Amino acid sequence: MATNQYDYDAVIVGARCAGSPTAMLLARKGYTVLVVDKATFPSDTISTHLIHPPGIAALQRWGLFDRVLAKGCPPIDTYAFDFGPFTIIGTPASAETRVAYAPRRTVLDKLLVHAASEAGAEVREGFTVEQLVIEDGCVTGVRGHGESGRTVTERARVVVGADGRYSMVAKATRPEQYNEKPQLQASYYAYWSGLPMNGRFETYIRPHRGFAAWPTNDDLTLIICGWPFAEFEANRKAIEATYLTTLDLVPSFADRVRGARREERFAGASVANYFRRPYGPGWALVGDAGYNKDFITAHGIQDAFRDAELCATALDETFSGASDFDVAMGGYQAARDAQVLPMYEFTCQLATLEPPPPEMQHLLAAMRGNQDAMDGFARTVAGATSPAEFFSAQNVARIFAVAA
Ligand SMILES: Cc1cc2nc3c(=O)[nH]c(=O)nc-3n(C[C@H](O)[C@H](O)[C@H](O)COP(=O)(O)OP(=O)(O)OC[C@H]3O[C@@H](n4cnc5c(N)ncnc54)[C@H](O)[C@@H]3O)c2cc1C
Image (cartoon, rainbow, N blue to C red; front, side):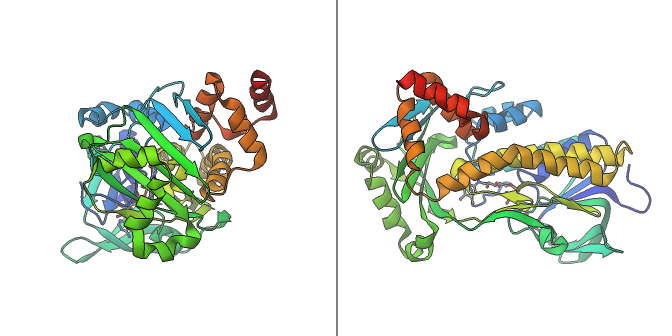
């Protein structure tokens, strides 16, 4: 459908959780799409990969969920939040999907790339975009190279940056950045065998420390440990010791780990928190390139899926002439921001690893034994219920009334 002036309707930079679904959804609507990534697939990336039910629901809508299942990834139907004096145990079920899954990125990203290609998008792996082509203030293409090293230019009606939190598309277009917060915590993770989780996501929250564990492919369990960003540099020299000392804060869990075996080396990161205006003349941003929050609530993958759907819908509206680019993309930005802002604030509060404020501690304590409230909390962390709704005055009053 691209006009003669362009090679493609869309060139998408980055082919993981945001890029491949955007390419797939546009290609399914009949648009010509090129999606490139400097990586080749399957490949890993520094990220754990819990996908809450709303993210699984997106995979179901796209007809891809059975492929995740076929790779033998176990379901997670129970979330347990251990705050020390008490534990809140609930189900993260959303209206559409009861369970979460945590497919390895080697599995998930490969499957997404394949789905984009199957939908008709041209996929170019091992291709690095070096710069954007900008004419009269409008992005009209990309310049980059594949494995041969030869520089090529590809022109498109829109260039979509799905190139992660160090996005070169964002660096080149310099979008307005807002609601910024600094790095708050740092985490390291590793995969363990011999540590059955029985369908549970378990998280342990202690002052200035936290860790979580959940099952993934190949009978492995992922354990991630976090500490405040202020300790990031110092602890980099002693990752294993800091990780194991963190687990020792919960002796019963440390005992389980002593019977398990670490199968891979430690990986970890600390990330900044920001929103970026996700569009401008000839360009758009999806996934971490456009919006990022700390991974403590594990929302990045489902956020990338949501962006792919919203952005592909907005681009369809502009390509088809149904809407002006700025109007449609402004709608994408407004919908994204409205959906994520309450979770952004909640996540950034958790990521300080400070003990919850006293009123939150009272509320959490009041939930004990109240299964509806505990399920509501689990659904809130999963993004199936908005924190604005769960922490509304009315719902909080209801929880205290039951506890009285
Ligand atoms: C430690 C950690 C743990 C996390 N845990 C979770 C979790 O449990 N659950 C969850 O939902 N989220 C988690 N996240 C967040 C999640 O990883 C991201 O939100 C998600 O990967 C965003 O997807 P994306 O497609 O936007 O970016 P990415 O996955 O970063 O993909 C960007 C792609 O762009 C490519 N690229 C970049 N520049 C170029 C270029 N110039 N040319 C060509 N290609 C380029 C890269 O090679 C890469 O493949 C975690 C993140 C971290 C750091």
